[in-house]
Length: 266
Image (cartoon, rainbow, N blue to C red; front, side, top):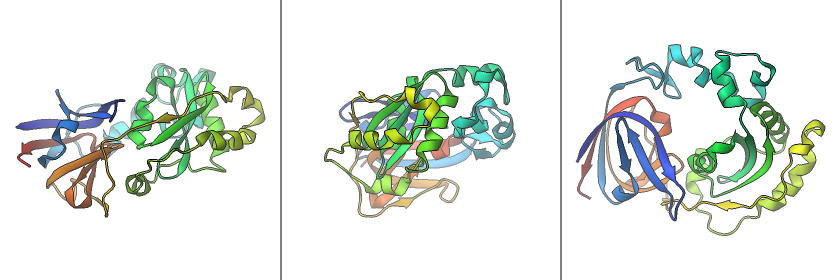
């Protein structure tokens, strides 16, 4: 069975276990059904996720021009505390930024090998946690816009990590219960005075079940260095495909890459 097209991040459905679908142009491929099968990928080009140009991908699926011009790649996407749409001030495109920033947001704790803090739109739960490979997650604040959530996160970052360590996330196969509520109580005092009213102390912990078992070793594979890759799919966690031999491909890290993919016999 053969497929070809532009890679976008995998879609997911929260189930037992989580169901993953590789978005390859017009095809949505159920990756869970391919676990145990040999997959061959060949990198054949690029297609910017914004403008569709065939220029080399610069970052986040964007060509260089779009990365520095598109509102979907603006600084406030990475650093929500820099959001200005609530003031009526645009960074690159006010209408687009309002559609992103002026929505209810959540500040959360997530366990991805370590406990981290993060921010996302309310509508992106639990997708955001799945994408990060979080085994457990717990909202600690609900805000009216992105700026408010970002300011809380800035205060939390003085005490907790705000980035996922991808290697720790993949090495960890934590199955026991983790009491994030204890962390929530501890960080309550770290909220900025003007944002304490957003604290949410009655949320339930969400546990996520990935189709994954940690291998003995972990090696990152990129299609830049390995334009033709072949391996047996063993599992999926976050946006990582786990192959035999401990090889991993970060699907999100390859957004905008055009590939040919063959499903071979296991």
